[in-house]
Image 1: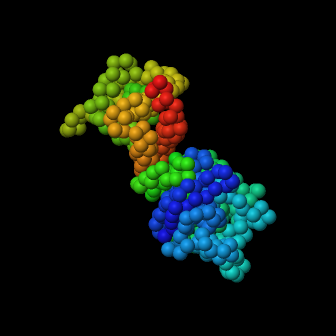
Image 2: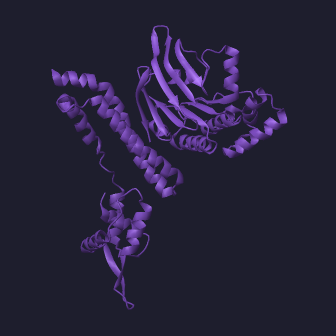
Image 3: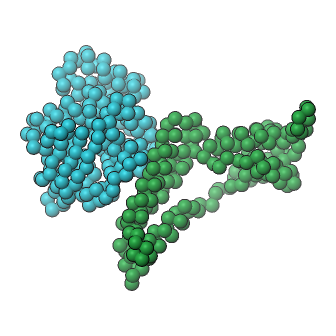
Length: 221
Length: 178
């Protein structure tokens, strides 16, 4: 459903990805691991259509997305993908509820309907009490659960998570991972998690280990 | 840690029969190896001999004799002393991992094993176990979650060591070949 084939990507003299090929199936939960600088985040950004590789192909549902123009790629992303970053990256001026409703409004849903759906997602993730708070007033764990709600609110086919628990303590991280993977499994959403934390990788069905921009090994449960 | 101290700890809640001690041990410490009945009674005898436990009551209503055991003031003092200590920080499993890794570098070529491949396989085995524990933690009782946390975090320490070992393989090989 999602694949990278022979992908090369460099940043100046640094070759981040070197002919990398991976395939991810519908509804799969995959952890991408490897040491710092092995190309994990670059792979995630390429798969999510945020970065374009120099050579090689990125396909989503069999369709090439790397060769699309910026506007078309943005549309593919907005309609099919959700992203969770390490530090939530919520809009600081908006409330938790408005942050979650935002992707729906971008997708041309009405404000009231968006707010209702967003509230149901905050409830699902156990942070409904935070609806009116701004990101600065949330704990790290709460902010990250709001970020998970925002990534899932549009019912995406794929969710990309880049070190989703990197800034959290063990228990808060466990809660976020339980919610993220539990919801993904329920809704058969494909989940690609980049992490250097083995405890996070252990939530996935499969691990792809990167080393020097290529796949060192792929391990299935 | 000895089974004796664990049994003393369980007795500190009140007198218990041997089978109750076994049941409570297995319930409170789901990550530990289940206690055998023989082990419970042998431990109770030892605790009695040392004056840490005593027979509180013996009943025989038609069936086999049922003995109720209780902790003594000496037993409580011993329990307090033990709880006041810490466990000697000792690397348990990593000893075996360390030996395998060094041997894979020394004898890998002769045995047809690449040390890096060994470490990747070991990593996969550890992560598979961690995955099972993670799933069990999500559906388990608080005691099971606590036991799973303990195992998960120790496996995580091994996994981080494996990653460092991978980065050191070249240096290690150079040293061994020199």
